[in-house]
Amino acid sequence: MLLFAAFLPVVSASAISSLFGLNTLAFLRGKYIGTASEAVNIQNATSFGKAYGALATSLEFGIYTNENNLKWEVTEPQPGVFNFTPAEKLFAIAEKTGKRMRGHTLAWHSQLAPWVEASNFTADELKAVLKRHILTEVGHFRGRVYAWDVVNEAFNDDGTFRESVWFTTLGEEYIELAFRWARQADPHAKLYINDFNFESISPKTDAAVALIKKLKAKGVPIDGVGAQSHLIVGSVPTDFKAALQRFADLGVDVALTELDIRGDLPETPEKLQQQAKDFRTAIDACLGVKRCVGVTLWQFTDALSWIPGVFPTQGFGTPLSDKLQKKPAYTAIRDALLLGH
Ligand code: 9MR
Image (cartoon, rainbow, N blue to C red):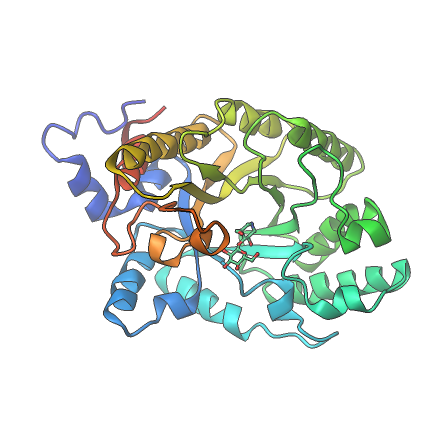
């Protein structure tokens, strides 16, 4: 749809986007653009921190996700001892700057407080632990979260369930329970299942589709599917849109919840061009699916991306350089929003 084509001869695309920001362009398409971040990134007195903070709070983004501060190891480090102070700081910035929040995440195997696995809980005990965690965390933020990633990374790539402490102790039922408790604690938040490699048709997404059908048939309150979208330059799935549409056809929203597209170092102009095409493919996939509500970047600058820490031979996965310069990927996102699909 050439929504803005009429303006382009008189106002350049870059002028439009620097004036209005990516999220405003997305809003005009019925979507959002968000970012993962934390208050410590945004309220940082260095010159980089100030420039980062200005961008993070600008119209580029309409929704935040706490990158780490709503994870179990932070929010319930000891049994029944809750700490929402670090997460609250990002909520405060969001509320001051008119942004929404996604909540990440409740039932996950990683960044779990060590006591959860070390205690060798019985099924009944572990159920009580999960229930208290979800009711307390979701209840604390009741009314302030647009969507929660209730269950994160539940599947292996072959479509079997991941052998997390939740699955091995409680079986598949933990998923249904987590969604029901989340709904009880905040009836208005959208409740998502979230995972990586949800961006193509595969044994993993076949299994997710089957699970969602089953959950919906049982009346379990599941509202959305998050495709994390940690992708690789040159390898973005060609059936990305089809995979999103297949989820949407189940009667749920979909979202790209953690988009970044990493490449093998060194960064070259050719790789950045390919990355731009790949970002455009990702944004177009969301634009092409009516029930895709929006896209969250997993940080927006290479300076704060998780990628080099985990993949030392890869990097440059975000749309802004480590000096906050707009890369071709930024332009590609903008063009997709202005002209795409
Ligand atoms: O970006 C997060 C990084 O700072 C943490 O060290 C890491 C620990 O697992 O988690 C990263 O975020 C992950 C997200 O919570 C779930 N999907 C994968 C993300 C990248 O690892």
